[in-house]
Image (cartoon, rainbow, N blue to C red):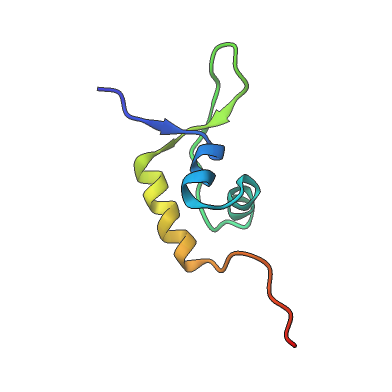
Length: 72
């Protein structure tokens, strides 16, 4: 039985964030990404598993997302 995998774009949509947000989390060391997969005839992508998505959901709750609001 094959496990389902998701691209970073699909994961971002599931989490309600932008792809660049996930890339920022990776760059800042907030999350450890899966290896980049090379697929025949297609550009290389990161393929996330369902357990990776669950882990990212937990991380999202701990990370303040969005820009700070202006104080009046």
